[in-house]
Amino acid sequence: MADRRERPERVGQVGPLEVPGEESADVPSGPPEEASAEAFQGRLGAWWHGLGRSTRRTLLAAAAVVLGVLAVPALQAGQHGVPAPAPSSPLPELAPWPSEITDVTYAGIIPEDLSGRRFVILLQIAVSGPIPVTVSQFGQFHAGMLLTPGDGLPLTITPGTSRIVHVLADVQDCGRAPGQYDLPFIDVTLTDERATQTQSEFLGGTYGDDLHRQIARGCAGYPTSFAPAAPAPIVSPAG
Image (cartoon, rainbow, N blue to C red; front, top):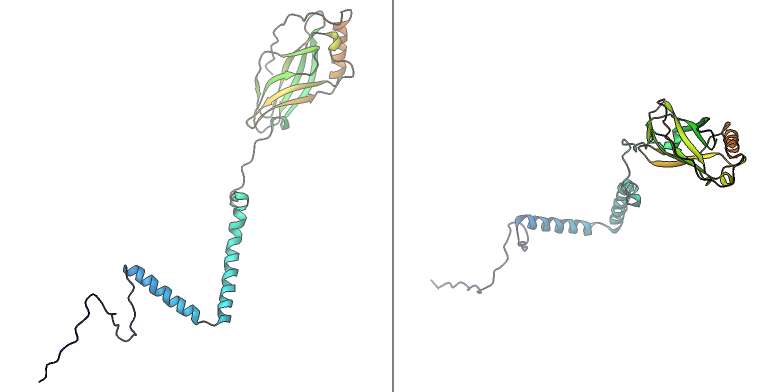
């Protein structure tokens, strides 16, 4: 029998592995998960390129429509960079401004001394609600008359109630005191849980006439300017 010699293998070279029933193919290197992903991508690419051109166009158009429908709610929610609130979560209701729920009305003038240049302005302050309002200060724009809150301020008024407060008026300069036709405004500083406001209140009623009558009586026979009268404490009534 003749000697059968096998062909020697070349050193340093490894041939491809053969898979039964299939053509020879390179086995992807790496972990099994990566090999499976690469194989799936290869089959998906082969399937895609095997489709007709018109079929690929139809599938791309359908995918674009689906993505557009899904993107609309996200764009609406993220408009201007602020997420839209959920329909079931209404915005919290803000507390009202203090001037919106507070009424200030004129309640009379009481002389404080015999000179007539010092007198007390009575104001009724009512709060309609739904939260308390605190009254902290009064003022007016006439340089010839000084308004000073009576004792008891700041005063907190609960919803649905009213209080009478005393404001001491001191006429310091008859020539610069409010005249008969000046608008009788009084500035009132109000505070609630939302804000602090200084509101110019037009008292109306007989306030303008009563104020002019009191100033005319106190300034009768006096020079244009004179020293202010000594202050005297005024106590606000309890209700």
